[in-house]
Image (cartoon, rainbow, N blue to C red; front, side, top):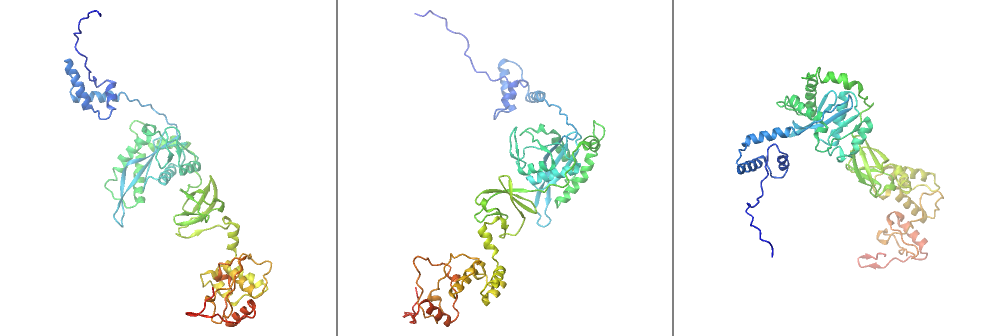
Length: 485
């Protein structure tokens, strides 16, 4: 039997609410939870002190003490920026309305800001959007305005600039890579959601909004060039405004610190290019803006990359340039280089009507009278003007008249000429339809391989040569002469 113990007379335990002292770390930790506010923390704090019989702060004093305590938690390391080392860039949050004079439509112009680290020398301009071309074009304008190139450019990780954002190892876009190679500069993006990595431009954006955009708030602008001209005038005044705690101004500090150590600009401005991926079609052409450009035929059905500027189109395959064409705005047309074609296609293309006429003039048999007129003028846009079809028609006509082709004839013996059916024969045709031999398949291109019969005498002579002794006409059919099959 267990020994007897007196019953517990202590009061039951209860869960206490957090103290929520305005100067305790628990307040900051609780505010990070969703739905928790300073009002809720103050009520819990007041209730806990009321249970203890103590006097609590009012809500206003609670908030003031908490905010004062939180500001003391933040620490900012002072950064030292060597002269000519870094250029900080960003876009301002404010925009400037642009009015279309023709339609009255209003669009928002984006404001680009660039600040040098050592002298705080500031540049600003307006762009229509924030695409990669706008970013790179504005950076080049900033470098030309400053007259040199720094060693580093520090942007944020905008999607237009960075192909693969990352906290430590970012991958820039193709246009940014070309820009860095052309201007011999490195780009070091700031970490995501860390504006203190580029504090100079954050302050520069605020100064541009106060001293430039605020002064232009009552003006109306109809073109981007007009807006940039107004910004450039106020930009000179901004850089010449004296410092409050330092001697001189931004312009004098730039001339003394940054300007002597900046690298020189390249000889030519980099052309803005855009990139597009495309797949080569079976006709060894790729499509761009409705126009078709040729590539080497070995790349059929492979994916290539197009580098497009205002004047040229470069086609890249596995980081190697395989074709270059002049940019064309003709939709539905094509640009083909002969070296991109297969040998058979190139040989077919070389037999033009002019070359056929020259070849026929040098041959033993004279040309038919209709060849020179039809091939030279090109009045008939059909197979009669096609060089290959013309070769086959000429061969068929020559074979039926007993003429032997020379050894240098430009065709092969793949097509076997046959006679057309009696449906297309003239009224004087008296011969039977020619029977096709089973071991020689008939030629499908009868409209060109078969020689035309223009007179009744030619038809009768051909029938006598093909079927000697046959002069009987076919029996009449139901609706006239019986058609040969």
